[in-house]
Length: 228
Length: 228
DNA sequence: CAGTTTAAATGAATTAAAATCATTTTGGTA
DNA sequence: TACCAAAATGATTTTAATTCATTTAAACTG
Figure 1 (cartoon, each protein chain N blue to C red):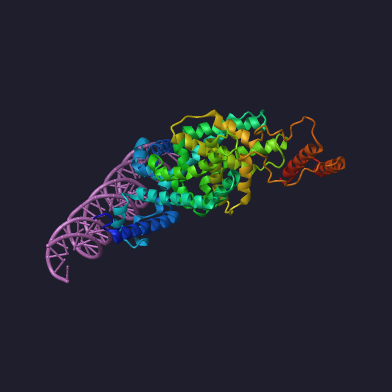
Figure 2: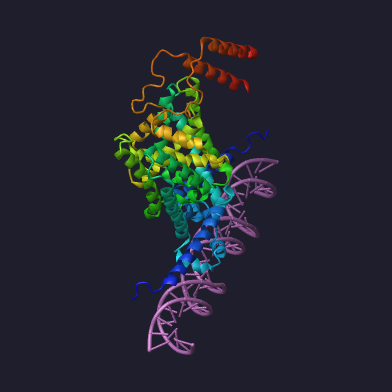
């Protein structure tokens, strides 16, 4: 009967909502929350100002919509980026790379996240769901014996996401691009083994002659400086 | 002559500015950036609305003032919290505890930080200065041979602050309080010693490699000093 | 397919709050 | 005490979010 009555209608409406979200994402990213004007967003979406309010109660709600969609898509992308066959360490690396790359690409949207409505619990639902991707990888690793039984998943989660987010911020601040070594060092740190990016300058033990040369070089420097 | 002409005057003005900052901090923390009204802040500071604009160009600038002061005070507090006699590992633990405790206590102000003016470089100056406290501890540890020469300070900095910030967010989200174990686990992770990892530089008879590292560190210090 | 009903869209009008500025007050100085 | 400049005030202006009476479009009906 009325099981699927208004079919094309629903599609049109969803398309329009998505258009508004696209416009909002663009304007919010470019101008930040305060700088973005609803009138700009409406214009970018080819819609009247009032129409925006049919879909979202207010400006914050609209931001929550943008941010929520971003994290949902991120969850989907992460699941696609992870090879179900791989072991925990490999999967973790895949997730780390995907995550760092994504938050660098869409840094502005990420920045808007913790601004949506910090007090309103429910707005972080999609973030929580995303974070569970990490938990699943780790839990599976523990279950299969690839990771120690006492692995503190919850705390490692904070290390994982916290470090990557902060690294991204640092990179952005310095105008630098994606850096592989961040991921490898993080994994080394989390999964045991010491840092130093594999055998940076291997463990060849210097001879006494090397040491003496070095000492002489230091002494020269000191003499050059005199006054000290 | 006019070296210190308006003395009490300057004091009064600074006191007033500080009063406005106090009021703004309170209102911003309670209501968030958007929720805070300049009129509320003015009232809380017992000042006319227009007066606020004599001290700060606009609302964002006022927020930047609040946030900047917070991080300056944090830097001061951190320096006080660190025992100059202690070794690097101990100092790091002191900083970690102080940091986690502080950002939990003043979570709202911290949240407002990355919202101040993400694009405007200079607003993060005080944050950068704060972060240097960590760098100094680590560098000193390396210089004294307490930490390996190849310690990737920059990356560990992201691990340190990223993890603590994310942990704080997690704790707040769950309504939980300060947790010692976060700090100890983080330090364990950062400074080695994992899963009975067999001491990287365990034995107390130093190898030539250790000696060489120490020499290199001394030389680096000399060079750094020379550049001035 | 014309007529009717309901949903969606519009943008002018309203409201709220930031920012400005002409005027007043204050504190220091001669 | 009179004067000046700095500081403060708050009424006014401006800007942008939100509402709502009206219009337009879509879906349904017989």
